[in-house]
Length: 558
Image (cartoon, rainbow, N blue to C red):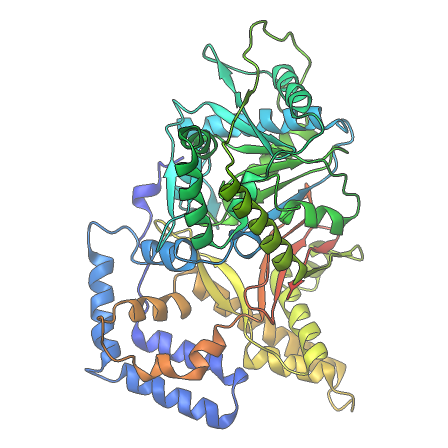
């Protein structure tokens, strides 16, 4: 799995001139002539010889060349974008996948057991390092984040959260949650992994033990603002020594299986259930939570801080592939006698802790009520036809999104698309700024009512917009976007040092206020995926482009 890791290149530091030119170009379609002139002047001041930008650039290059640092951005970005972020992880950081129906396993016990069997097979490859590395354009990419997939958890703290990782050779259990009650299930007994039939027996026992009455929703505390959850966690620990053991069992678990007493049917109902549920039958700090409903439908919820979506996409694709295509042994087998029952994890809930739980539920309900969700499942065509137009399917859909926004609001606003930088050591993502002069020209021509622009001219504008988008996302994937570079330079300012004009310029904040936060993945085993918007007036648009159809699940807006 890690055999190429040390040979991967280091994340580059673009030249100051390169970033300045790309940044100014990205501002042009977003600003008035006067605003653009002011911004351009601030950028020129920043990059002038012997200016503050040059000095910061020298420091950044020195950081990149430090032999003790594998990636100049990695620690800074994990902290600023995730661990220091104080808003609740749900809905603002977490993301979900909705699985295709498994018609052979409508029984939730069978579905949970099949998923767990497949996940444990994947885990075995990760733990032993035998998982095949991933490639991008035939080049190996970074697999570092896989270490945070299993037996890991985010822990709340001030001023920043921190991740914990248990020893997989010691922590050989999963957590099942039913009716807000947590159960510890050993997935290996006497050196042997539980079979699917044995896991079925364990999950069936959880349903029996959980019965009908819900317990106080301790898991709801993980849905709170991170500072509020930090204080509540201390209160929980102070309430009883039993609570420390309970937290350790959950945080060290290989993964979590949430057995929900819900039966979502429509794509929207499923999206709501996997994205957030009712905020109670979860532990939102865990990177891997598989949700199984009473009607056998299933999905996945991921915590984002140490791992982006591509590793969990691979995991969920693997899980469904081996189940649907009979690549893993799910046949009924004899259940060993003497297997330990699932162990109920007992929390001591004092009146003060109960009050915190009640507040968390109220706060969660208020946050979710501010959001709207919609799923657009377009069955007309997919990437097969788009490729026949000699177009990149991703760029094609990006321009469709731009045109839709332009028609709704009469203008285009800053748009983020995730660009992967995993070809570099500890690489994660860079911003692709989708709005360009070319995309705005295309949208304006398509939205005009005068008919001045011919169809042939519109097609030409469309192709130019796609070309501009592909140029930017290619540069971003090569570590030459503007957002992470400008972030890194700003990070190197000394305490008390005057903020350069480029960062005071309103265009700097505006151009990175993502009115549209977008990303795409494709899977024949998903019928939806998504996340929240990143600003109150924005949309989070997750889209899939499959061979013969396109699904845009779900745009979220405040």
